[in-house]
Image (cartoon, rainbow, N blue to C red; front, side):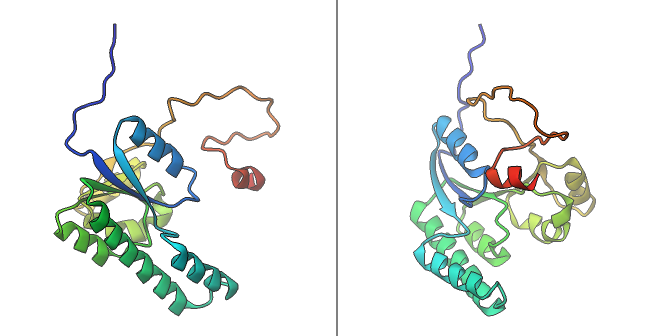
Length: 193
């Protein structure tokens, strides 16, 4: 009989950095918690009401104000740094996190925190990946090609593909479209496809 148990790990408290609009965030949070990790979520798009207010103001200006965008981004970086100190996690798992400045990541690492980036996008964000991957203790990509390109320029990265939530089950539904999309369902994606 095969018995699966949670591996013994020294990292029990995790600060998970993502955004609440991501369809991946709930699954990542739920599965980390299912594995008995103590997980605190930091929404890097809207860490608190002040940043939400600034973002609404920026949207009203049709995202034309680089000055406001810089203020929002700096506010998010400061809020992330404060949250890190408050939570004092064993490790920080950032899902994408393009809004976080390299200086902020370096500042957090200098304080002794282990910082991981699981960057879900592929080659279309290559310029960002190339500039930022080395700033993290660990950089994960679901793309073998990106991993190979990082290795070619001397940056160590790790292949971590996407996975399915083992608890969920899906029923077979009648096919409506002539195309198949493999990924997480969202209303927005259904509308787009």
